[in-house]
Amino acid sequence: MSWNSATEFFAMGGYAFYVWGSFGIAAILMAGEMLLVRARRRAAFLELGREIVARRAGGR
Amino acid sequence: MSGINWFRFSSPQSFYPLAAKMIPWFSALAVVFGVIGLYISFFVAPTDAQQGEAYRIIFVHVPASWMSMFLYLVMAFWAAVGMAMNTRLAGMMASAIAPTGAMFAFLSLWTGSLWGKPMWGTWWVWDARLTSELILFFLYLGFIALQSAIDDPRRADRAGALLAIVGVINIPIIYFSVQWWNTLHQGASVSLTRAPSMAKTMLLGMLLMALAFWMYSIAVSLSRARAIILERERHTVWVEELSELNQ
Amino acid sequence: MSEASLWNGFSAAVRRDLLLAMRRKSDVLTTLFFFVIVTSLFPLGIGPETDMLRRIAPGVLWVSALLATMLSLNRLFAADYVDGTLEQMALSAVPLGVLVAGKVAAHWLLAGLPLTLLAPVLGLQFDMAPRSLAVMVASLAIGTPVLSLIGAIGAALTLGVRGGGVLVSLLVLPLYVPALIFGAGAVEADVSGLGSGAHLSLLAAMLAVAGFFAPWATTAALRIALE
Image (cartoon, rainbow over all chains, first blue to last red; front, side, top):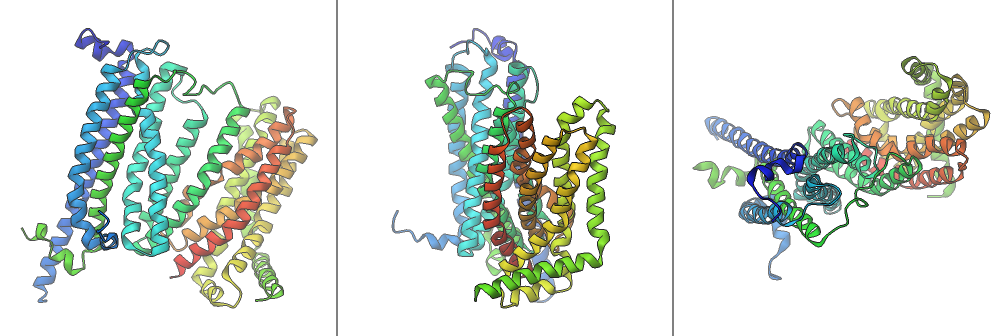
């Protein structure tokens, strides 16, 4: 293991901004994408529910 | 496994519950590969003599570039299947993959830029790889824009499929031409592969991260495909009878 | 279907589009004016040093030609799609691909060829050497048909689509990259003494590939739009 302490780990030999910027954006993008997919799914369900209610109320 | 009738799953109705069963598995695999991959990239892989710790960016940059290219191929494959066999599901898969591919292309550009700043001294270099990745990103955006501009989903699928196939024929030509252009204008170019001598642990870390991204892509595009099915098939009886809906 | 009737269909499509364009000359002229104005804006934006201008000239002329071609793509199928002519073409005895090839050829005659002929005059504004001007014209003569052929796919895909005009640029411009690189690169290679032969041959190879595949892809895209 090449790290002696947690601070050294987070400092990344002076490249903290670049390294954590890269891994951070990867995490943010992936989490964001999952949230977007979930929102899309929820919106589809809402739309569906509304349509079904309308169809049943329409006497079908 | 040979007893399974694969064609049965080509209808959205049977694919929908199947995908629901597959998503947790692929998500779990993504987490497992991701954790091991991150462990190797931060704790096992030694500090690079020339680049210091900044080279660890490669563990996210290279797998992201691989995935962005691979996903375009997969997308074009589904597009071609959709065109040839006229199945609805294939078109839905193609449009479910596109945003994830675009995301990885963007991630590759972003991390490439963050790697370039300490290594090359600038945020952007017109390096052959970065330039081709940028054009690949544009191709993804074109695909997504075309599909979202067409209201009729069937036409959107088929138009997108054609564009994806044209794109896939063009990618080698684009890559070759950018490479050629780059060698002609030397000076600006520093190739990514030349700098670090690829140690075995490095390769292993990159492969594991690529596997994690791969599993993540499968899981997220499957769930996006499910959402697309709900949007498009909402007038069918089977969607109305979904148990999730009636709870 | 005999070879003669295929050829007749092709030339009829070319003649028809040329005739229509002659009736509405302003469309063609607008494209040319666009080309002239854009190239003339670059020195104003960058500064009048001749050394600099000479260096950027091939790239500027090529990018402007690319944009001008792209702007004129809209008229390739749009009018025929709206008035139903395209549907008649799809139903006619001549294969649609042949008619599409004819329309693309007409588009090149109306956009690519005038741009090619105009380019040396504009090149003088950038103080290009006569030899470079000749290479420039050669590269545009081989390259602009590629632009028309690839552009036709984009024009067919965006037919009758919301915001088609802007969308077509998003689809087509990334695919234009190889033609731009080899087209503008030919002039630079000639100036640097490497010779433009390799660039021009690759451009010609691209033309051959595009000439073979693009009408087929355009036809498929038109059929999707006509469904």
